[in-house]
Length: 400
Picture 1 (cartoon, rainbow, N blue to C red):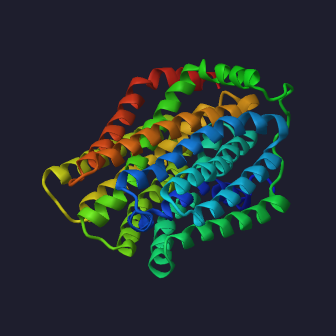
Picture 2: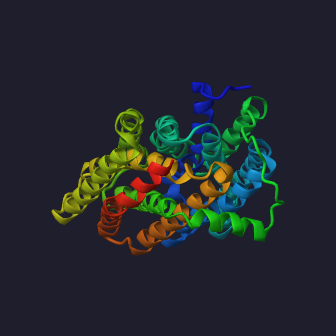
């Protein structure tokens, strides 16, 4: 059994948190091939991303209260079983409609990992210490978007798109085999009320009344939406408009994702020295700068992949600073409702990301303007929110 505070437990929590990006990013190089082989349009293939995001958002609403009532570990095992079954359904899909539906079910299972990983962190830590732990988890989990598209590009080139989902089935089974014997149960005091729609609404109402929580929720949601604008649009922009192969796209996507790893690594150091708010501010400024740089690259007609990838790496470095700290700040006031606080944050975050990603997919045509505009808009919105909510968040931090 892994002990709290050990690096091994941090790595396991990072792996659980990485289920979402791994499941999304690994099949990105396959999107054009899926469209061709299943006779689907670009917009229909984009729905396999949006349906996953919607399922990921909806699933989190249920996992939080269930885990507060029944414990982290049994709920996590149920989520992983659903994930494996749905991943197999994705691999065996014979139409784009079947794949869209299977992706939604895959997300319902996969969403349990990140909700419960955050809840476990809040069970064990709070404040800047929780921010540091989430940053360390982010640094380890950042390997997923770096490696996933590279692996996906190789699988796509060698074996076709179905092999990606068979690989995810194997990964889910391996994860369950590790979690069952090694993951400790960290919930000290279980919720007294049985789970029902009324008790779930009551928990979410308590959480949503907290002004500082809503401020951190806004920061987490706008910053994350820019990432999914990139995920939804980069495959088609870089492969169709900029002429990259699946493997070249995987390399380009991985280079951009290194930015997130750098950001989370810096945040783990900054937050213990300068606090949550300063780390948030540096990250928000980097996101806005990266988004605006991408917008300028498109405006000046640059057509190299680097003109989009490097600004996105800067945006993702900022995201690596903003996301862990905003999650830690949101969950700090709710030690007794960590599952519900994590679930509501994830639901709103993923819902906005789904809308942003779907909008980019629908607007993509013969230029990268929709992608660059969405990334720049979300980066500037995050910086604006950080500036506007500083006093509110400072008052809340003083109380905790």
